[in-house]
Image 1 (tube, rainbow, N blue to C red):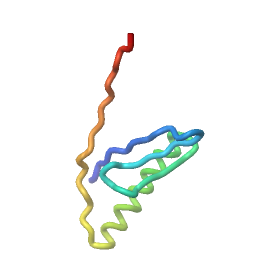
Image 2: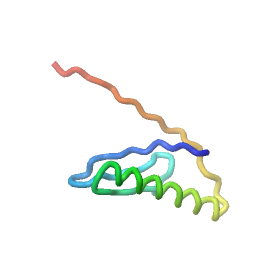
Image 3: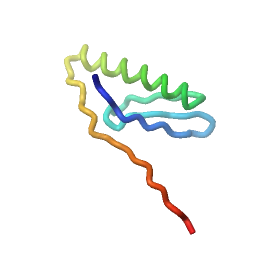
Image 4: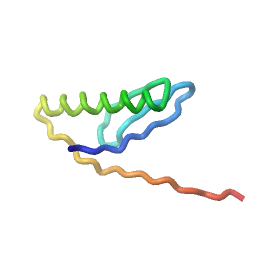
Amino acid sequence: MHRFLVVIEKAGKNYSAYSPDLPGCIATGKTREETEERMHEAIVLHIRGLIEDGIKVPKSHSSATIVAIHAD
């Protein structure tokens, strides 16, 4: 099993997503949920392509955290 960090951002009226560990693997959608589903599909296709081309699937090295800041 492979696990990859996916970043989802609000982009105007839509959303966009990417994975820092899979350059060029992106997705967009009208909702966050649609974007997440499309990104999942994009990652599956991306990994299948890598395997078909004989390229090793990269290991995930990315992580994320949320930092809370109190602005006074």
